[in-house]
Length: 399
Image (tube, rainbow, N blue to C red; front, side, top):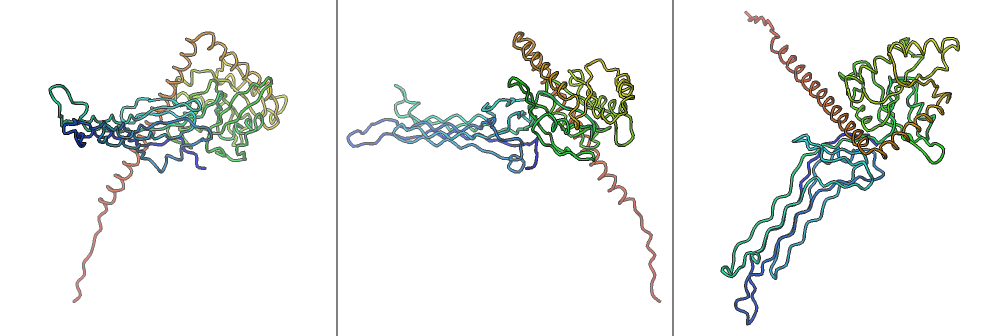
């Protein structure tokens, strides 16, 4: 199935039914009075977080959705049937944004969570509603109100506790395969990971955490190089980032310089994310000569001026992975416990995630706009070149 993590749709709530103009007409009751009923309310459009969905591909080709209109009222003070709500299932982790205002309408992060995105129109009133002691035969009715129309942007962000950062072939997918049942593609060439992957890491005592692997970044990703930075938004919900560094790069580059590239691209993408908790994981240390491991690892730490935790491991050989996973589990348990004890801390964490998502959205939009301007300029340059081409034509007349 094609992985789609963004989609733009238009939703139209149903129109309310019109009120009915009617008078009671029965034998022996010549002045029965008004009996026109109200119309029915229009259906609303509701999004619900559903299990079993992991992509927004259903919204890639079908973009317009309309709820049912309410029916008109009828005689005998009968109210028209209300329109059925239109319920659209979306993956857990979907953020809903109003494209016109840019406001975030909601975040569907729990199974079964519902969000009304377009309110159905209110029903019209029948003439029965207008009768009074001075107006015994009213002919007034009111029409049903139009339903809300909204253009929405859906953004899917995977739900994970830990996110992996690194250059292509840093060993992120190998690490997930080593510690979980996930089986992302692994190969000896860059960009084998083209979409985010999730792995559930089971620990003792029925404890577990979720790791998210995204496609690797390269230098210039913030300007659109490689796969760009569009997948970094999937890490805005995580509690902890692991920066995986290949200690034996295949292209002859140095591990320290490669690590610096990722740090710079992360800073350009989101200063809030860059300031969050992040651990340095030096991968593929089993490929280094034993007498050079300490020296080369220290060189990377010193080059980055790293102040946080540092781990050494080999995902392929499962060397050091258990210790790393145990430390991650302890960190997550500690964070959860602190948020339970201090509600303000939980609010601060949620606000920080919201800031990261806002920064990510702004940076991605800026990059998309820059690409559009570049394409437009390229077309104009081609057009100008064609206009400037002069051809000298020599006309020869036959004698």
